[in-house]
Image (cartoon, rainbow, N blue to C red; front, side, top):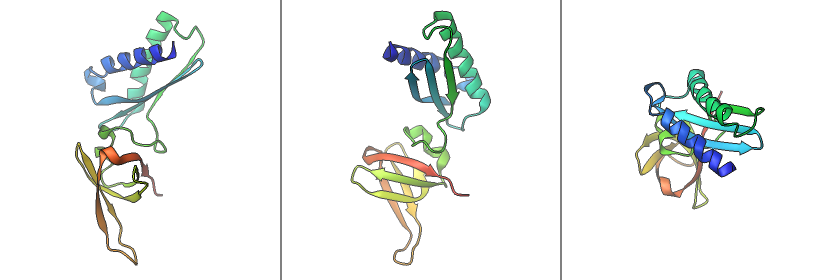
Length: 153
């Protein structure tokens, strides 16, 4: 049942994202644990509370109508948050200029400023240090194991 429900929720969200008010949004992850359903969405221009609320109401309608999780369940629709790794190409462009930590399949960790993003690769500039000059690293998406935005305060 859980795979089928996740598939259904993904389909409901994808259909809802075809509407103008959420057309910039996309699914990042759906997690079902018992009667708790978590839906993480992102958007090309970021995500607002209103975006989450609109999708939540659509999913809630389905869950209430079909009683898939029974009468009592928890539904959380939110953005993935800064602590979650980036999973899709669409998440990268809005982070140009920010500090990124990229782990590659070659066991390399590259930390620096995201300079450019294309559909095949991204460019990260590591800062100048006492030992090395600033350097641009071109990283193909197919060798990225994980990457996340580093927030500095």
